[in-house]
Structures are given as structure tokens and as C-alpha cells.
Amino acid sequence: MKQWIVSISVGSFSAILMGLYFYLIEQFTGKQLYTLLMNIDFLVTFERDTIWIAAFEFFLHTLVAIVLVRIYLWIIDLKRITLKDKRMEWAAILAFVAFLSYFPLTTIAKTDTPAITDLAAIFDWFLGHAIFFFVLYYGVEKY
Image (tube, rainbow, N blue to C red; front, side):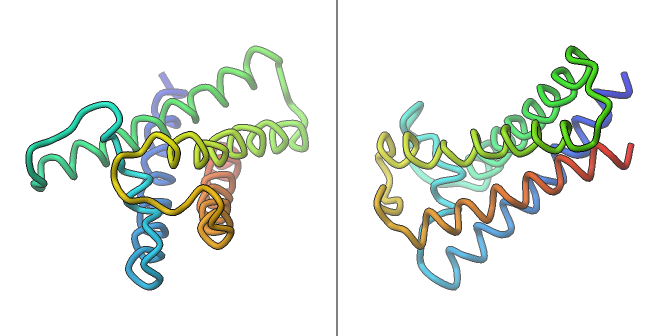
């Protein structure tokens, strides 16, 4: 039960911070990273934008973050990882895998998103997932 509480709290907090970071990047630079983060148009297309669709997209983003935290906790338990360095490595691996989502998400998006070769957008996407790494690792360590 404690692991679910940790997963929900750390996952939700990381989702909010990443969402805020990408939203600010999009507002100040025009790089559509928040759009990419929330984009699900390759799964379903909505007739029009509403607050409910935006809330649903953010819910899905938060759910993915919660699942990643749960996977991280499962790996730590399964492998009985007690060394902080090893736990940090696993947090970095999961954050890096999440960072790599830039490439397939950009490729399959129907909405305008940054180009797959846009180095500034890739760097900002990396920084956003570095935020996820820090919240994941230190958030779980706190509990």
C-alpha cells in the first residue's frame, strides 16, 4: 500500500513539474513541447478542444508518471537494491527511456510538434526528463 501512495504522490508531483516546465518552454520559445507531452492525436482525434480534453490528456500524462514510479519501486524490490548509487542508476535509466519517447512521439504526431532534428527542443525535452529523474530518485528516497 505504501508503494502505491509513493507512486501516486511522486508520480503526480513529477507530472505537474514536467508539465509546468514544458508549458513555460512552449510559451516563451514557441517550441511545442507541452503540446508534444500532452499529444494523443495518434490514438484518438477529438472534434474540438475543450477543458475536459486537456484535463484528460494531463490525466494520461500523470498516469504514465505514476506507472513509471511504480515500475521503479518494483525493480528496487525485485532486485533488492539497497545501494543508493544503484537506485540512482535505475532512476536515470527510466528517465532516459522516457526521454527517448521524443523521437517516436514526434514521428507519429499529427499535430504540429518540434522537428525530430530540432536540437534545442531535444535539449529542452532532455531537461524536462532530468526533472523527472530528480523527482523520481529524491522523492522515493524521501519515503
